[in-house]
Image (cartoon, rainbow over all chains, first blue to last red; front, side, top):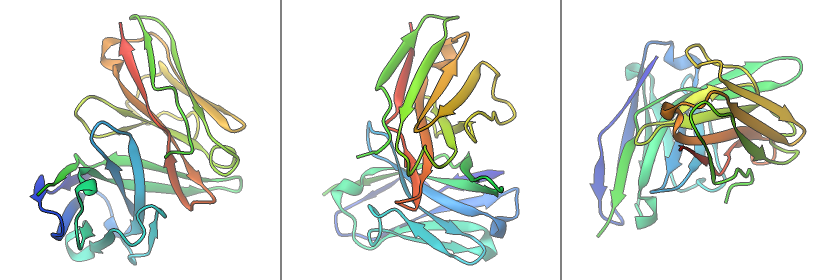
Length: 124
Length: 110
């Protein structure tokens, strides 16, 4: 399993941006892909997940309406997109594959493979 | 602001045992399995423990996890210099309908 993310970006406030996460080594459409933000010197923030099979999405309330997640099954790639960046979007963004396992007792969910991260810098 | 809290730091000398706590609520840790991620300096997070106490292949058995009620713990026995990293717990939150990460703990090897 490998997730390779696009390179670092430097943008101005108000600009749009789309970063990518290329997956390989597994059946892309059978798994969810998640996005995680890490602001400079801070902890991890769960942004949301997208099912690669049918593009079903779940957003964190903190990120609903702020970003758009999408996938292109033909090239096994997931995307995270902003229409109008703010300085506060400056952060490292990670994609990760989500494992979901159901049992009679509980549902297990965890990120088992991570991309290397894409650093997004928004500055005037 | 995370609803799952961890101590900001922990430390120990080589060979010692270090324990990191993770405190949540009934909607996350109290209802769902806990996972732990290790983030070495300048790198992406890496899965360390899943389903409260399961180690992925390749993770040394000196890392162990446990859960009781709305709290969880990660123990590192036989601390090594390469264990110096940030550690995050995480669990699904049934109210938020998403994962919540803990605030993170920086482990320093003295």
